[in-house]
Structure formats: structure tokens, C-alpha cells
Amino acid sequence: VAIKRIAARRTSPLRAIPFEKGPLGAVRTRLTDRQREQLARIGSRMRLPPRTTIYRQGSNAHSVFVIAEGVVTSYRDMPSGKRVVNSFLFARDLFGLSEQGQYVNSTRTITRASLYRLPLDELTVLLKHDSDLQFQFLVKVTHELRESQRRAILVNRRDAAGRLAMFVAMMREHVDAAATEVPLPMTRSDIAGFLGLSSESVSRAARELERRGIVTFENRNLARILDPARLARLVASV
Amino acid sequence: VAIKRIAARRTSPLRAIPFEKGPLGAVRTRLTDRQREQLARIGSRMRLPPRTTIYRQGSNAHSVFVIAEGVVTSYRDMPSGKRVVNSFLFARDLFGLSEQGQYVNSTRTITRASLYRLPLDELTVLLKHDSDLQFQFLVKVTHELRESQRRAILVNRRDAAGRLAMFVAMMREHVDAAATEVPLPMTRSDIAGFLGLSSESVSRAARELERRGIVTFENRNLARILDPARLARLVASV
DNA sequence: CGTACCGTTGAGCAGGCTCAACCGCTGTGG
DNA sequence: CCACAGCGGTTGAGCCTGCTCAACGGTACG
Image: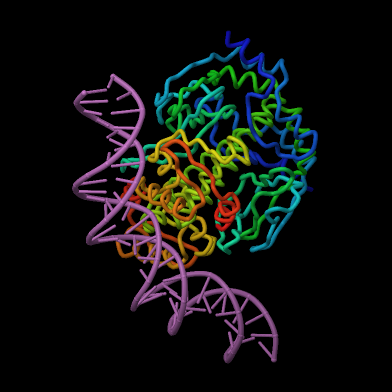
């Protein structure tokens, strides 16, 4: 069943921006049917309900995961009790970073999610034998690195409203660069952990953006962009 | 000349922690003589004086670089004039991340440096043909990603002294995990940009660590760890 | 030897954190 | 179907820490 599901996908299961521009780069972001089939052969599909821990930091790393559907968060619990959210992951994102055989972060579903689980040892062999496929992974990890750096820049801002504006803009990209409705499936605490703010500050920042008429937060899981131009200016004014 | 220099190296030109533990993982962190030779064939060596810009953000990305010797900083200048330092790079580190044909960060030497320049198009071809070599790059980029996440955690700390302590501990790793003398070749501004602090706060944090008897800053480019145990505790208390 | 920049120190301010109380939604069980 | 319990979210008061602006000292490089 899993094989059929992956093989049937027309779009690539991995999402990333290529190293290079141009037609060659564009081609590289997609997998061939044969590669999809190979991944499906070693992988298995998992369906998980919301708020389910996938693995914990420090546990033995056996697999890498690709999201077919749903939203996942990658985070670290610090000794102080604070939770740092590294990233929110969406369809076609890859996760399961390990170091010396152990996962470095914990991951948990936010929405109901469907994942492909790729055993690490088998994936390693496959990547060594298929350099095109491996190149996809290289591009993907490189993309993650850039995203991580973007987050670092985001957190450098002093003002909470600016950080939240950047966050809304980032989430917007996952729907459509021109979308006005932006779903925020994660909790305010998750957002706070990602932005390096307290959840109170996230609340206040949300109210601030509403006061300024830039974004409204219709309910806890939906933001609406009222003034795209001013949002863009605020985001750019780092 | 460049070919000889790379081929002569006994240690791998790339530094990273492998995905997996065990002997297999250990082997993977090293390149074969043939791979070194191949990299040398497409690459050229550059020697640069201190404080020399290697490339600027937004310029056309033609090459990837590997550091043979010296220290390099990767940073972004923001519209507000603030400079965010993404990373400090040392011997065997890889840099030259690009997106759609353009470099995403600027890079500059801190000390005198010796670099291997690898043209991107030739490197791409080489990686596609040598999946073992490509695997090294994959491991390397993955390592960079983890480092970037570590920095994100670091910056989440509220206290300047704690951030600076983590920084000193990080720099210490580049010498020896047990070293008491830690060279800091970069300026206070560079450190501030990396830690997400003002340079004044870095100064005050340095004074604070001295006051507590944990670290002394003997001169602008050398820190001495006085109390490793308390430093470790401070670093861990995130 | 001079000069410009790096680094340090001080004063005052602003913004985010903490603690605390309250509100509102959601989901569960009777 | 409704009531209640619990948690996520919001709002307020006061504190704390890092930022800004400013002046001064030191050092490295031309």
C-alpha cells in the first residue's frame, strides 16, 4: 500500500530550493518514478493523530521521516524547562536529524499527520547507490540550513510585533505567497518557543498587529492579512 | 601545487560528525586519496590576508569554499544596518551556500586564511558521479545545520553572561575540549553579532564572567578559563 | 608617531519577562 | 444534550536586563 501511495505522487516528496537556478536546477527538485519507488520500498507509512510525540531527543535514531501530510514541530526541551522550537515542518519536509546515533531534537505532530518512515541504515545504502537521489537530500538539508539561518535572523529582532509579523509571513509562504488567510495550526506557546518570546508577549504582539490594522487573528488558528504592503514593510525592516 | 597540497593531507579536508556511530560512521568522515585528488583537480587554492571579503550576499555564486587554514566569518547585513553573524568557520569547514544562483550570506576572513575554491558546476558533476564523496558533503551540511540550531538555542538565553559563556565554550571546542586558553580572533562586534547582543553588552558580560572568577579576558583575542566546572554549569543551565 | 577604530564604562530608557488573575473554548462524561 | 473541568489564551502590574547615546582610553596599523 505504501509503495503505491508514494509511487502515485506526481510531485516530489521532497521540497527544497535548488542550489542553482535554471532548468537544470528545477529538474533536480523532483524525483524520478524509480526513485520514489525505491524510497517506498524501504519506507513505511504512518498515520498519527494530533499532538503525538514521534520521537524524543536523545533516543536511538533508527529512521528519517518525510511528511506526506500534516504539520510537525521539532523542538528541544531545555534543562530550565523552557522549550525551544527549532522548526515547523510541512508536507514534503524531511526530518530525523541525528548525531552519533541519537536524535538531537524531539518531534511531535501538531495536526493529524501522515509520514513516511525511512530506516536510516537502508536509506544510507540507497543514497550511496543513487547519487541523484542523494543529491535531492543534499539540496533538502541545505534548504533546511538556510531556513534555520532565517530563523536566527528573525529572533535577532528586538520587537515582538516584528517577530510575529515575520512568522505570519513565513507561514503564509506555506499556503500561497499571496494568501490573505494564514492557518496557524500550532499553539501560541509553540509560536512563542519558535520566536524566542514568552506566550504573553506573543499575545500582546498579536494585539499590536491588530491595533495597527496589519493582521487580525480571527481565532486561535487563523490569521488574516489586512494590509499586505505594510506587513511586507514591517517584515523587511529588520 | 594545489593538487599536491590537498593530496598530501592525511586528514580529511572536511570536518563533521557522522550520522551514525560506530566504525562505519567513523570511516565516512574521511576522504580517500582519490577523492582528495579529484577535489584538488577542480579546485584552486587562495591565500587571503585578514579582514578580506570573500564574497557578498546577493552576488553570483560560482564556487564553494573549504578552509585549509584560518578563520572566516559568515554574516548578513540587514537593512537596518545591523550585522547578524551566522557562523565562525575554521579549518576544514565548508561554506558558500547559495540560493537560486546567489550567495545568501557575505563572508570575510578574520585571520589570514588559506582556502580551496571549488567551482560549483564542476563540483556538482563530481558529486553526482561519486556518491561517497557526496555523502561527505551531506554529512557536512547536516553538521552545519545542527550547529545553526545550537546557535538558535544559545541566542534564546536571556542573560548576556550565559551567552558569552556558551560562546567561549564553543570556541574552546575548536582548540581542545580541555583547553584553558581560548583564542578569540574575532572582534567584540563580531561576537556581539553572533550572540545577538550589542557590543557594549558583550563587554559587560566579559567583565561579569571575570568578576565571578569563571573566565578572564587577558587581551582582546585571548580568553582564559579559570573555573572549567562552573563554566560547564553555566553553559548547561539554559 | 599619529590616527582611526576597537573596546570599555556610565546614565537613562524601553521593551520583554514574571507573576497573577481572569476569560473562553474544547472536549468529555453523565 | 448539557454541565463542568481543564487548558490555552489574554490582560494587567511591576521588575529586570539589555539597548541607546555618549564620552573616554588603548592599541594596532599605516
